[in-house]
Image (cartoon, rainbow, N blue to C red):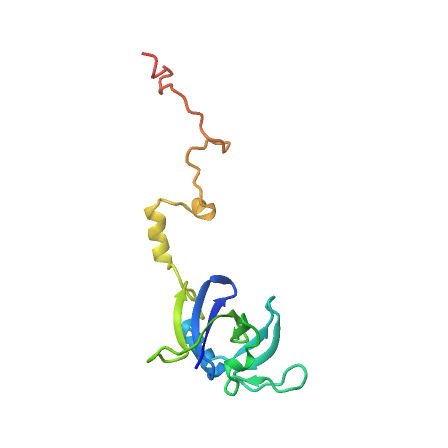
Length: 192
C-alpha cells in the first residue's frame, strides 16, 4: 500500500515542523491524532483540516466534529474521510487548525510518496522532528533562571539584551573612542 509523506509546519515559524507518513487508507482522524502527539498538544480541543491551494487559501473543511459549512452542507468528517481521497495534485496542501479559540495553525504539504510500507512500522509514523513545538499553555523554552545565568555569563545588562550590542568603546556622544599612541601622562609611548 502506498505511503504519503507530509511536512506539517507551524505557521508562525516554518523551522518548526514534523514529517509524518500516512498510509493511503488512513483517515484524517488518525493523521490529526499523530499531529497532536508530535507537537505535544493535549488533544482536548476540536480541530479542522482545510484543503488548500498554493497560497494557503482555505477551501473545503474536514472537521473532527460534524458541522455545517457555509453552503449549508455537512463538513467532511475526519473519522470517515481517508487522507488519500483528497490528494489531487503531487504537492497537495492542507491547512490544519487546532483549538478554534487559540487557532494553532499549521501548514501541511505532501512532500513524497513511497510505493510500499516499511515492514513492522505502525502508521501514521513520525519520521522527523525539527524545532521546539509551540507551548499549548504557558511558555516553553528558556526559563527566567536560565536566562539570568546566560546574562551573568556574558555580563549582559538589560540594555545589551535589548539590541544585542553593548556600549563598550563608545564615549558619551555614542561615538567610538579615538585611539592614540599616548599614554595617560600625555607622552607618546613609541617615542623613546
